[in-house]
Image (cartoon, rainbow, N blue to C red; front, side, top):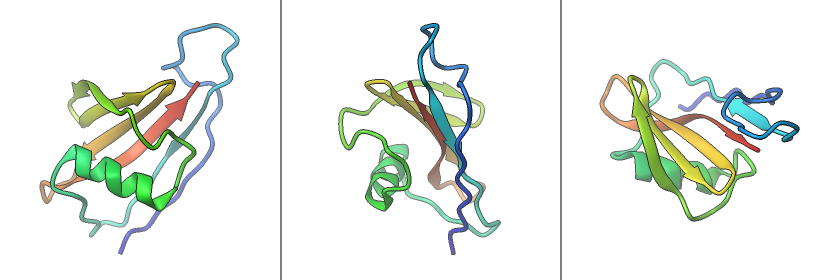
Length: 96
């Protein structure tokens, strides 16, 4: 079962222009959460849930880090993380 905790964050470091209004979120999952086969599949599942106000299309990979993949569409960015079982899930994001 997916346990989700979403919150609004203040100004987000990923926003580059001074004076931008930015908001963000981070999700907390149950220990037994299982995600999707690919980062793109995780993005689609996230978009279908309507958890956050982000674009429904135009997403592209813009980078990776130790925890996963960063995706961007317009002024919105999402982070998709790889879970211990090898599946993927959106765990945070921001818009500016």
